Amino acid sequence: MEYILAGFRIGALVALFGLGFQLAYMPTRIFHISLAGIFLIAPYLVWQATVLNLSPFWACAFAGLVVFILAVGVGFQHELLVKKGSGPGVHLVASLGLFIILQQATALLWGTEPHELSGFWFDVDPEQPFNYLFQPRVGTGVLALLLLSAIYLALWRSRLGLLLRGLASNPVQFEVAGMNSMKTRISAIVLSSLITGFASILWAIDLRFGPELGMNELLMAVVAVIVGGRLSFFGPLVGGVSIGILHVVTISQFSSQWNEAAMFFLLVSFLIFRPNGILGQIDSEEPQ
Amino acid sequence: MNYLPSDYYLLLWSYLMCYWLLAASLNLVMGSAGYLSLAHGAFMACGGYSYALIMCNSNLGVEVVLPVTALLGAGLGMALALPALRLRGDVFVLAGLALQTFFHASISNSYHPGGFFNLGNIANGTLGISDIPKPVIFGTVLNSQASRAVLSTVVAIFCSSALFWLRISPWGRSLRALRDDEEVSRSLGKRIPLIKLEVFAVSGSIAAIAGALYATQVGFVSPQLASIETSTLILMMTCIGGLGTLRGSFVGAALILSFPEIFRLIGLRVHMVDNWRLLLFGIVLVVLMHVRPRGLLGSEEIS
Image (cartoon, rainbow over the protein chains, first blue to last red):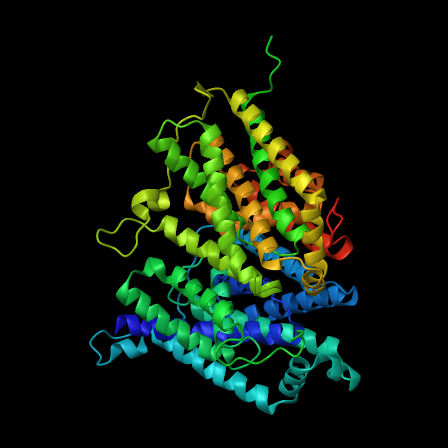
């Protein structure tokens, strides 16, 4: 049961982070490594706010505001490169640079020792029946699933969701139709960063975190996106479930030390044999 | 009177030679072939570990060990070339990361009796391999730092000359044609899969030699060599120096290695030097991508 609960939590949180990544990837077709920096800095911001005696809700709101400002900066940086006609490699390296800036700034501001978020979950009575259902690892997984459902609903019902899907589906036609692609791309990056920040806060509850947070989790999210289908908004959900199952199988059959290797083995298998993922679609932007 | 610089500066010079080779090997893949790779830390670790294991278990000299590490690095490079046969762009970057993660997990996996396929028993897990014997060349032990610095310099000049010759050869031109348009190269009769295998094998072998040279200097290797941080550092050296030139790789490596010394001279606290250095290079990387995406001395843009 322990393994299954751990797999559920990881699957749900990876799916949420994967959806955040996908929201920025599909309209821009760029691997935004800087999202790993957002994932890193969000729990530190919440921790800082709780040190200043803010309640968990206001601490999250404070972190959301800072992440919003950072994301707008990242979005404008991206648009500057788009205006210059830079290729995806240049975008990727610039995004890597942004991640390094955020990571080192975090280490300089808050030090390298591990931190933890306290007071973010209610105490669970060990005598209570089915007490494991109220533990943070289950609760954070359930919250992640609820948020995922809300985002999918918004993506299919709201005007912004329609714009994002339109830009992701056919950017040329989107611009020909007179839509503002720059504004939509920046909105996508901001929305993606906010989802990433929230996934990160859920991830950090019940865990100690340090400046090494971010990159490995981003890679897990990217694996979920590739496995699920990098050109489908439902890809991260399917990929997250796959990673959760793989996590349970690896821990129960081999050892937790082989988790990452197993995950990347899965990634390479998909990249070679089914590069479009489980819900694969052909990229209209790539030559056939 | 002693005209030699202190051992510390000789060690720094030897590091520069190692990282120059690493940046130059990545430059071959990125600048000439157009593949952005984040797996060079794995190649470096492959060289470092194979050198350490051979030296700890035999009395062979570097004249034998370095070619063996180069062969192993070439093998790992060809493993990375397999996804390159089908993938390009950001998806290929992921394949490189996957290879590196698998390599890192394999060497850092600690000892479990009866465990599943465990390299920890050979590579000593996360503790790494320490007390690597001093390098021996043609029966002479290189005890002094000066002699090891000369070894690094000679090997680095030999390898970079080979890279320079490869770059200006017909093979180098085929490589650039492959980068610019794979379909046109194929239509001209070029054997694209073979060229890809060759370029990754050459790059992997040079990076493995650099890893072995690093092990001769430090006398210690750990799984940290195969981490994403190492690969990012090599990528930063290559991008800052410039793509498509050997001198760009040298300048990039020299800049990144010299900054901690400058910070020490300024008087920044030692435990913060690394963070400030990386923060500065992150800023430089972003600014460079905006104002000069081909790097300081580069002739090619990141494709």
